[in-house]
Each structure stands twice: as structure tokens, then as C-alpha cells.
Length: 283
Image (cartoon, rainbow, N blue to C red; front, side, top):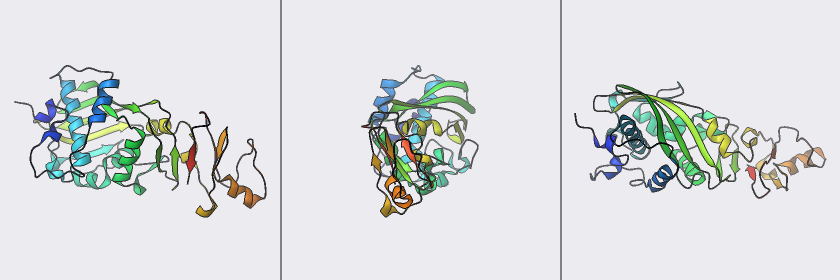
């Protein structure tokens, strides 16, 4: 049996010449992700090896489910029998995953990230901005081959710009870039057809490993719960810490704040481990 093109070339689905393919915003540009992959990858699978084949299929799958708006045009999946789940949670069909968005389906709701309040466009913007050199993906170890494929993977890329999103508290937080590499690890179990189309894909990983790195300079920001009106918000930054909405708190309590004060009434003081040029804000 000859192998499908998406098993031999990680960008095969981007090379389709059919004018009927409906892309979300035109064919996506993966040049940064490809450069990041080549620059920082830790493996070098032999062309034609099962590791290389599985890696190519997953990369083409991600391109299709993220950027093709008609699931019937996803060549990497067996659509009538397709399901996707993360960490044993809800199983999404192709149409449900399209509506939910890939990042939202992969992350769900955590203290750091409220998928119910973040659109597909907002989620992609947040991560593409923070990981400006791209976010590479590679297969690290292959444990079993078709029809049930299991493997360990790694996502990686440097944090080059700020990260901002809405946490589960309802508040939007923003963290300046650390300029460090972001690395996350996980595992997958995939059931595939004879022609290597995905029928069931189960992803297992800890989403918090991503956000703890993106919010390293202000690890408590996503946990804040603030009790004042938006008009009262006036974040204060000093050389050692960022006191979030402290002015409003002082005005209500009739007190002043020093570096050693612990904010009351649900307000958050975000200590920064980084130089004073790096800040974190909450709104």
C-alpha cells in the first residue's frame, strides 16, 4: 500500500491545488513554526521511519483542524468515526472541535485560561504573539504502531512577547516575556484506519506546564480575584513588586500600602522575580 502524502510531508495539506478548499483566513503560514522546529528540535527521525510518518500525520492533522473550516475537507481524519479528547474529558466530533477551536479543546478551563470566554481568534492571537518565533512540535518516542499508535511528544519555542488572556476568575492578565524557552510534554493514543486516517485521538498532558512558564514573572496573577469597579483600577508598579488595584483598596480602607503590606479584601499583590522592567498587570 502506498502511503498518503500527509504521511510523507509535514506540509502536504498546504500544497493542495484545489480551489474548493475553504481556509479560515487563506492558507496558513507555518514558516516560523518550521524554522523553530529545525532550530530547537531534539530528535532527527529517519525519513520514511514510522516515527517520521506519525509526526507528519499529526502536523498535517493540526493544520487541517485549525485552519480548514469544512471538516469534510480534513483528509487526515475518518470524519464519520472521528473523535478527539484531552485528558479523558469530553469527546469532540469534527464539527464540535471546529466550533470549540483547537486551543480551547486542548486546554479547556483552568485557573489560567477560560476557554468559555476566549474565541478561536483570540486564543490563536494570544499564543502566536507570545511565541513569536513559532511553537515547534515533535514526536519524541513511539511506543506502538498502527492501528493503535501511542507516542510521547514535545511542544517548544521561546517566549518573545507578552502573554495575555482571560483566566477562570474572569479577569484578564498580562505577563511580559521571559525570553526563555517554553517546553511542554505529553502523550497521545491514536486509532487510525488502514490508510492512516485518524479515527480517535486522545491527548494527555498537563496544560499548567504551559501557563506556569508564560506567567513566570508573576505566578499569582491568574489567581487574582478583585472586588472593585473598573473605574477604580489604577495598577501601581514599583521596583520590587506590582500592586494590583492597590490604590482602590487604600481609598476604601483609608490606609497606605508599603512593600510589606498584604492586600486585603480579595486584592492581589503580584511579586515579580524578574528585573523591574518586566511587569504583570490584571484588569
